[in-house]
Every structure is written in C-alpha cells, then in structure tokens.
Length: 332
Ligand code: DP6
Image 1 (cartoon, protein in one colour):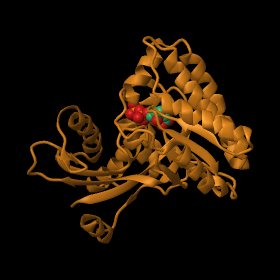
Image 2 (image 1 turned 60 degrees about the horizontal axis):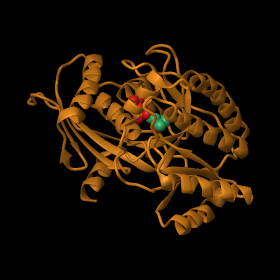
Image 3 (image 1 turned 135 degrees about the horizontal axis):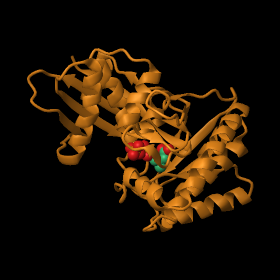
C-alpha cells in the first residue's frame, strides 16, 4: 500500500547549529522554529517485497549514490522499528527551492518519517515521529508539528524530541522569504556545522547562550512580544554565522546581496518599521514581521532588490494525504 505524507518546512527563530552526538543527531542546544504554510514536501512510500533495494525519485529524477544511501540508512531505522526487511519505492516532490537555505531537508525527512512509518504499519505519536525524523535531519524534528515548535536538546534518543509551543492568542507573525538565490548551497549544513563544532573557539559560547536564548524566546512567544521575538531571532542568526566566520578555515553563507538585504532591514527598522531578519545555511534572508506589515514590506523588498518575496504564515502539522488529494496531485 502506498502512503503519501505532506510536511511543511520550518525556519528556526533560535537556530540549531552543532551536534553533541552526530550519530544520533543530538544537538548542542535547543532550538525553536515557525512552520511555514507556503513550502512543503510530498513523499510517497511503498514497501514492495519484489524490490532488491530502495529506490528514490526526487522531483522526477531518479537518485543514486550518496543521496540514495543517506535515505536508505534512514529507511533501515524504520524497518528496524517495524521488524521487517522489505525495501521501498520512495517518490518525493519538493514545493521548496531545494537546498537554497529554505530548509528542504526539514520538510523532506518529516514527510518521509510519517509516510514510511505509516506504510510500514506503524502508528507513532507525534513525539515519536519527531525522534525518528531527527535521525534523518535535525531540523526535520521541528516539521512534524505545526505552528511554533521547540526541539528540546535532550541528552539521548528518548529525551531529544520536538513539540509544539504555546504562544499568545493574538500573536500574528509572518515570515517573508526573500529568494536571492535558487542554487543549492555550496556547503551543506551538516559539514558546515561539523567544521564549526570542531574548530570554532566561539562554539562553546554559542551553545551556552543559545540555551538561554531558547528560554527567552519561549517567554516572548507566550507574551506575544514581537520586538523581543524579532530581536532574539536576529541575534541567534548573527551569532550562528559569527561562529562560522571564526572556524578554521573560516567560512560564511552570506553573499553581497545577503548583506545588502540586512542593511535595508536595519534602515527600515531605524525608520520605525517592525522588521527583523534571519538567515540559515545559504544566502537567502527571511524577514520576520507582524502580519499587518507583511504586504507593505514584501513590496518594499521586491522593489529594492528585484527578487521574489514569498509571504508565509505559520503552517500546519505533517499529515497523511487522502486518496482524493493524491489523485488531484497526480493530475496537477
Ligand atoms: C541553519 O537540520 O539541515 O537551518 O541535522 O545535519 O541534517 P542536519 O542539519 P540541518 O541543519 C539546519 C541548520 C539551520 C538552522 C536550523 O534549522 O535550526
């Protein structure tokens, strides 16, 4: 039986950057994200006793080599859990600019965790799903639930999980994705963060202060304090990128347009506009603002940079698609 699941991407307000256990993907600090309604991945999984290996098609392209191997290793976890050895056919469609710092691995592994466990006959709780998704890609643990999510650092497989966070009822944020660059990032998050953990003297300070920032962010979300949310989010991103610049060899995901965009954010803020920025493992900038300012800000940035800006609201949790939805998808 084929099961198709949809999971939305998330963007971290308090970043995850660095692992204390690379094998189990236990992070050095807790992180907090907003799930985005506009970007998602649909993944179908079909376990078939006729197959002699897993197969994986991404956006219509049959995958091989490292991409297939990584996925197959993840499928082994699901097989182990389900207690069988059957291979699967996996088909994935990304409604996200792949690997351009818009977190496609988060939605990818969250959708796969849900589709694969269901197709294997397992009915896991969301908490358990976040622990499995985490093994594919750390940030994927935050794409099982919708809205605002915390991934608790934890110390082992059982205690490192994600769950939704309560926020003020009148909190109405938007995340604006300024798409400066569609190209896959030059350095994956996985290798970038490993290099930083191993060589950046700023890393211990980053991990320690992020834990404090995560607690402050929880309080700010609960209070619906936009300025505090924005300030903490922008600072978390800047601190993460500062650890990379202090690594050996030093590196950065910023390009000149990233800096120009940041400059414009600061100029607008000086003029009283409520807007903050965050940046992941790529040059693209995401803006954080109250919903009422989203359209005006998107227009300002489109005019200024001549680049697409996508307005995202908090997105839903991962879910299994119905047969009717799958058919509609196939004909789209
Ligand atoms: C900058 O989750 O892609 O987006 O666990 O090695 O797969 P792996 O890394 P990944 O890293 C995400 C890093 C980030 C920040 C974040 O999403 O918290």
